[in-house]
Image (cartoon, rainbow, N blue to C red; front, top):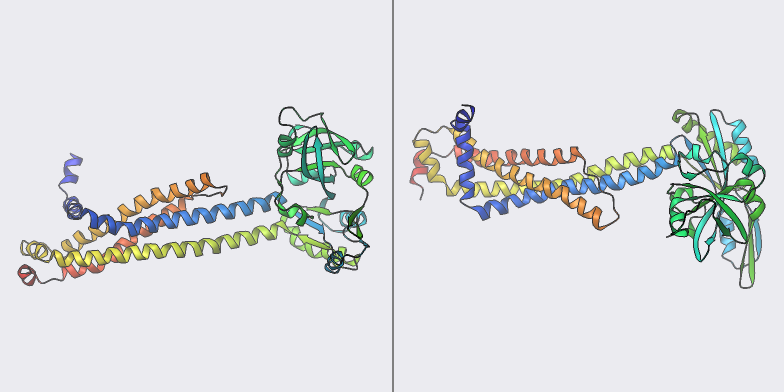
Length: 433
């Protein structure tokens, strides 16, 4: 009963007539729809790629901790110039253990302070060798960084107190060093010292966690070896000597990085200025930098919004072009079907009936193209993700936005041709050949 009522409804018959009219010119209708197809596809695909890139950046920042403040040692610019002059010299710069102690007991709302010494070296096991970051740290590292153990245990206070030769390595490094056996309780070698692997953590670092950025470009981010801070201080010392032809240089750095964990995010912004003032008071040169992940996250979110607006605006131009194409074709259709319009008006059709018929045809073109564009817009980001390492995220709102705009575009650009058809004089229309 309901089906019969729908099929006999005037609107249903008008839709049926509109589709029939479009099917009389399949190629022309298909070409007209291409503008909407590519417009919707480009909106969804570009927003998906932008969303994926933004998500990657935000995830890297979140791994640094929204309540953390990171302080890195940085070689002063004048010392970098000396390093390239070929002369022999020695410099002392960067963060100290006294800095870490002062931060712990001076800055309000600090819950913990994590000093770290980071050294670039090679780690060996049997015939396998990998470049790595040797990180001297404390047992509080997993808690402050939100990292979970994969196997074994992390470093303990007893390890640090007795300067034990134990280490924890990342799962990625373990896979490369131990392709055929379990790394736990195995022994690895760094320089001429052997360390027992007591645990594995599943961590992928970030570029911001690398004070020695320049020397490690292109190397894996999951190549960290964690050793008790006291062991690193004892085994590696605090002075790094580099020898070149005819000259040598030495750098003395106590700590490469200090992570300060605050009580909450409200304390972070105020603490940044306090930390900067406190550390600068005891450093004659500018040999440190402060990174606030919370600020980076907010900047990344603002950049994401701007990026989406720009990408969406560029892609929306395709929809505009598609809408103009629809209007152009419909105006030509009105001219072709002038006599048909005259016959319909002579048989009693009202102006609104003519408007409805032509509007339905434009909406069918735009919505049909929009549906195909949605399918392609979802498939293209998937193909990009499969064929490259790029992360793409198709959000429901981008699909709804693109499809909604395609429908509105059809209506907006169909009103003028429909009104032109409705305003035709029936007598003049009947005379049209």
